[in-house]
Length: 521
Image 1 (cartoon, rainbow, N blue to C red):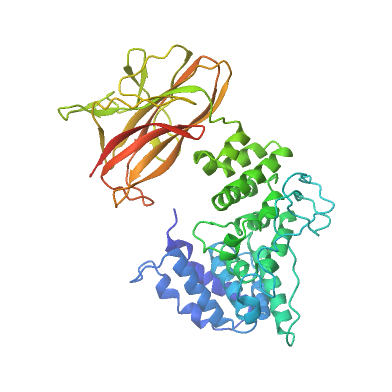
Image 2: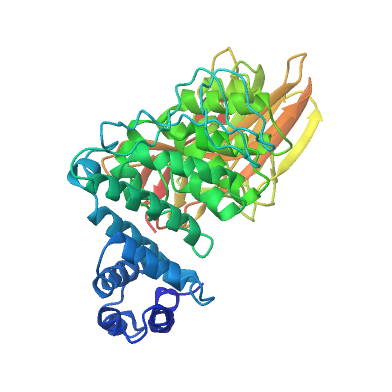
């Protein structure tokens, strides 16, 4: 993987200066030149990629003074050079936004939704002449757009108050607010033109916060762009929780605001765009779970061959959380009637303190019949799990495994017999297994997860859900799974030694909580 100095280093700086010199021959570009030592691989204080972009952005603004329109002209002039692409575009897009916001009058750049337009006036769209996604009738009153001749995706109609997009410019004062609005609109158009060279998803965030009501109609028009990079920018740039990006309070305050954008593209022909739409829906599920489920339900009323996958990916967090409307959308009934045995841990400490590994490879054990362990190996699933596979899938009677908890949906859960407590060191793996049997007379569609209750620094526990399997069990059918959950050190989590716990979750209902101890490495 390239390092930061390779992505935005002296060589890239030299190409950028050469490109700009073609637009402004003889201009010294002194500020950009002064950045060269800081970008070197052997610089005394190495800069992260974001710091490099910010350094070059500030130098660009110093080297190209003047109005937003003048800066726009320089950038558009550079776009004729084939070398004007890649990571050098990041500081360019950030400079476009910064120069534009310098020109905004206080009334237009203060609170979200300037000129009296709050963020809740988000999208009144209405794509006429659409030949892509047909309009969906139903409970989401999403977008009526005025984009005629659309060839991509259409809007969704129904009772969810989604954003009314209306781009009315300010008319107050001596005319400068109108000029600022023109600069604002031109900046968004320039960012869309630049994004095929390198995404402008970070650069549009300050514009969204400055005037969400003005920005959204322009962004809505991108959903019909022939360029998938521009269509993706409409979805990715307006995500509430875009990774590595600044939060936009105006978006967080109005979860409905971007519904028309993603509803216009959930059936986009590009998988690149659809993945962004699914991640956007997942962000929406963090803000408003019920709204996200309702949006997805609307999409399922007019699906194509990819819609089910988009919806599954977009609602993945709600499935793990056991969100009722989401489980119902996928046919996962919490009252499934399936018998659950486990989790059974593969390492148990007996009374004398000696550890017994179920199988030599450290794989999870599937308990069957008299409780003998069968080691399983296979591909891991979802983050922390490694190894494991279906061990048995047969219509058979279940014999209770020693130390396992039993759960039947709608019934009670027996306390596990605690012969001892399993131990695993930080950096190691915890093998476990779970067995399910459908003792009902009807097929059971199941989403099976497991929950690790991590110990926090203050001694309390916090839950993290990991995917195990999705399956349908016929009447009398039995299935067993085993996994090895890894406790290797990762940058996104700090492990705290002490008591943890493991549970299995079936269709959003957790059971079989069993403790284990995480040891210091």
